[in-house]
Amino acid sequence: MAKYLISFPSAAMDVPDGEWEAVGRDAHAVIDQAKAAGVYVFGGGIDEDVPPVLVAADGSVAAGGYPWAPPLDGGFTVLELPSREEAVAWAARIAKACRCEQELRIFGFDPQS
Image (tube, rainbow, N blue to C red; front, side, top):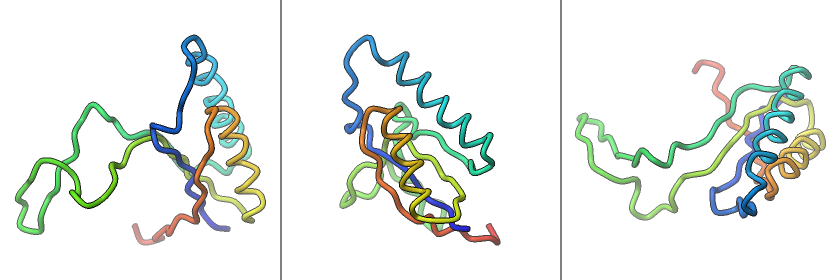
Protein backbone atom coordinates (compact mmCIF):
# COMPACT_ATOMS: atom_id res chain seq x y z
CA MET A 1 0.00 0.00 0.00
CA ALA A 2 1.14 3.52 -0.74
CA LYS A 3 0.98 6.58 1.45
CA TYR A 4 -0.79 9.56 -0.09
CA LEU A 5 -0.33 13.22 0.80
CA ILE A 6 -3.60 15.15 0.60
CA SER A 7 -3.05 18.88 1.10
CA PHE A 8 -4.19 22.42 0.43
CA PRO A 9 -2.63 25.89 0.76
CA SER A 10 -4.22 28.30 3.22
CA ALA A 11 -5.38 30.60 0.41
CA ALA A 12 -7.59 27.80 -0.96
CA MET A 13 -9.84 27.98 2.09
CA ASP A 14 -12.30 30.72 1.21
CA VAL A 15 -14.85 29.99 3.92
CA PRO A 16 -17.68 32.46 4.58
CA ASP A 17 -17.96 33.87 8.08
CA GLY A 18 -20.13 31.69 10.24
CA GLU A 19 -19.09 28.44 8.53
CA TRP A 20 -15.73 27.87 10.23
CA GLU A 21 -17.23 25.83 13.05
CA ALA A 22 -18.97 23.54 10.55
CA VAL A 23 -15.75 23.18 8.53
CA GLY A 24 -13.83 22.15 11.65
CA ARG A 25 -16.54 19.68 12.66
CA ASP A 26 -16.78 18.19 9.15
CA ALA A 27 -13.01 17.95 8.70
CA HIS A 28 -12.56 16.24 12.08
CA ALA A 29 -15.36 13.81 11.18
CA VAL A 30 -13.53 12.74 8.01
CA ILE A 31 -10.30 12.28 9.97
CA ASP A 32 -12.20 10.19 12.54
CA GLN A 33 -13.55 8.07 9.68
CA ALA A 34 -10.03 7.59 8.28
CA LYS A 35 -8.79 6.54 11.72
CA ALA A 36 -11.69 4.10 12.13
CA ALA A 37 -10.91 2.66 8.69
CA GLY A 38 -7.27 2.18 9.70
CA VAL A 39 -5.90 4.33 6.86
CA TYR A 40 -4.87 7.45 8.81
CA VAL A 41 -1.10 7.97 9.18
CA PHE A 42 -0.85 11.60 10.34
CA GLY A 43 -2.02 15.08 9.55
CA GLY A 44 -2.08 18.66 10.66
CA GLY A 45 -1.42 22.16 9.51
CA ILE A 46 1.49 24.54 9.26
CA ASP A 47 1.52 26.99 12.19
CA GLU A 48 1.55 30.26 10.28
CA ASP A 49 2.13 32.28 13.46
CA VAL A 50 5.68 30.90 13.66
CA PRO A 51 7.88 32.15 10.81
CA PRO A 52 10.14 29.63 9.08
CA VAL A 53 13.93 29.64 9.37
CA LEU A 54 16.61 28.08 7.19
CA VAL A 55 19.13 25.93 9.06
CA ALA A 56 22.45 25.30 7.31
CA ALA A 57 24.68 22.24 7.68
CA ASP A 58 26.93 24.19 10.06
CA GLY A 59 23.96 24.94 12.34
CA SER A 60 23.62 28.59 11.39
CA VAL A 61 20.06 29.90 11.25
CA ALA A 62 18.66 32.50 8.84
CA ALA A 63 15.20 34.04 9.07
CA GLY A 64 12.71 33.06 6.40
CA GLY A 65 12.26 30.10 4.13
CA TYR A 66 13.76 29.55 0.71
CA PRO A 67 13.48 32.93 -1.01
CA TRP A 68 12.83 31.34 -4.40
CA ALA A 69 10.07 28.98 -3.24
CA PRO A 70 6.40 29.73 -2.64
CA PRO A 71 5.45 29.79 1.03
CA LEU A 72 4.55 26.48 2.61
CA ASP A 73 1.30 26.81 4.51
CA GLY A 74 -2.07 25.15 4.84
CA GLY A 75 -3.09 21.72 5.95
CA PHE A 76 -2.22 18.16 5.08
CA THR A 77 -3.18 14.58 5.75
CA VAL A 78 -1.25 11.40 4.98
CA LEU A 79 -3.30 8.25 4.45
CA GLU A 80 -2.12 4.73 3.63
CA LEU A 81 -4.33 3.30 0.92
CA PRO A 82 -4.32 0.36 -1.49
CA SER A 83 -5.03 2.36 -4.66
CA ARG A 84 -5.02 5.79 -6.27
CA GLU A 85 -8.77 5.46 -6.77
CA GLU A 86 -9.29 5.15 -3.01
CA ALA A 87 -6.93 8.10 -2.47
CA VAL A 88 -9.04 10.20 -4.85
CA ALA A 89 -12.18 9.18 -2.95
CA TRP A 90 -10.66 10.21 0.41
CA ALA A 91 -9.35 13.45 -1.09
CA ALA A 92 -12.87 14.23 -2.30
CA ARG A 93 -14.24 13.63 1.22
CA ILE A 94 -11.63 15.97 2.67
CA ALA A 95 -12.33 18.56 -0.06
CA LYS A 96 -16.02 18.50 0.77
CA ALA A 97 -15.34 18.90 4.49
CA CYS A 98 -12.78 21.69 4.03
CA ARG A 99 -14.75 23.46 1.30
CA CYS A 100 -11.71 23.55 -0.99
CA GLU A 101 -9.96 21.38 -3.57
CA GLN A 102 -7.19 19.10 -2.33
CA GLU A 103 -3.87 18.33 -3.97
CA LEU A 104 -3.12 14.60 -4.09
CA ARG A 105 0.38 13.13 -4.29
CA ILE A 106 2.02 9.84 -3.47
CA PHE A 107 4.04 10.44 -0.34
CA GLY A 108 7.63 9.20 -0.65
CA PHE A 109 7.65 7.43 2.67
CA ASP A 110 11.06 6.23 3.89
CA PRO A 111 10.55 3.09 6.02
CA GLN A 112 13.88 3.75 7.76
CA SER A 113 12.74 7.15 8.99
